Image (cartoon, rainbow, N blue to C red; front, top):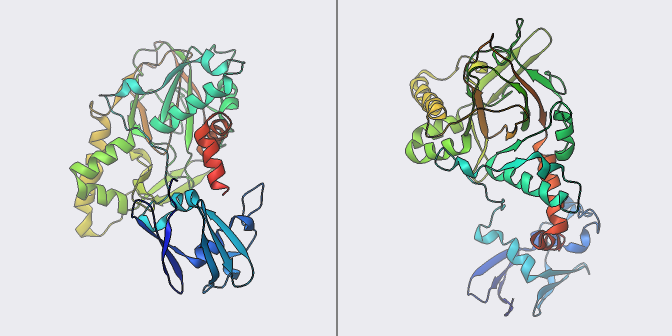
Amino acid sequence: MKQAPKLIENTDISIKIQWPDNGHSIYHYIWLRDNCSCCRHSQTNHRLVETSNLPLDIKPQETIFSDKELKIYWKDGHISLFSFEWLKKYDYSNNNGYAKDPIFLWDRSNYNAIPTFDYSFLSEKNSSSKENLSKIIEGFYQYGIIFIKNIPVPHVDVLDIVDFFGYIRETNWGRTYHVKSYADANSVAYTNHALFGHTDDPYRDPIATAQISLFTKNTTKGGESTLCDGFKIAEDMRVLYPEHFELLAKTPIHFYLKDNNNIFESIKTIIELDSIGQINCIRYSNHSSQPFNLPPEKMYDFYAAYQQFGKMREHQKYQLKIKMNQGDLYMIDNTRILHGRSEYSATEGERNIHGCFLEKDQILSNWKINRLKTDSYWSYWLKMSRY
């Protein structure tokens, strides 16, 4: 920063400063002491001082502004240093909030932007391999979906793909599963019937967060994959049908699964919002939702909202319909992307998918670690987060 901020007010509980652009920020003393950099472990960045043991009315003995940092002498003899860059980064008095990397919403108008890669781009064993993987995961984060083509099945299977991204989330369906038509199917997914767009396993808590589907055979008639961006639908609903959006975001429903060995259930909203109102998760699975249990005065309006979301997910404006070939794969964020299929022939050819669930947070962790090593922005982020 070319100019340093200056102190304009000291109160019993906080300090107020003025920035060179004439903006103002307030920092509470308890917050400053709680975030003193020397009270963190040098390697893990974890706090070493228990927050609940700090005096709530803690006060400084003296505050000194230099060209680059604020220095605080506390009455108990402790000294804290805060760079102005760090103070600006965590300026909670100006509603900076918790920043997230941007995502890109998509529908049929821009679905060509969905990242698509050849298997060779993922499997390269050279100095660019980590950079390539970072690009793939970045696309997965931004769009909630990526395609990988020309995977040499059966020499490469879904477990080989998992090794690039993280680790498996084992469920009642097993470590991996084969989606095809079975005579004794325990789910409509294991038939040749059409599947309307849905997210998987909303009856689980926590929900499975990422999913890989590798097409090992697809010679049947029909069976096109359908995909849509649930975040895009929800954001459009927020603008076009705000009453519907509010109902789906605030009204929990009952999701349930029972088979011979398991009973799973959860009571969750279809649209889940985070603490600042951003869409955090979509749960929409008509075949596993149970009878709505709502007050009579709310039931009709909720059905209108529920149907509106359901119609939008199947509308050609939002739905991508694509024939996946043998060796093609998609990886989706199961908290965002709805997937389905058209009906296919049970007698002509075969349609087999080898799939599994993964942990999205581990996938994104690998992305961040790779970026940290190669991207100056993330080197800066690390420096800032570690003070």
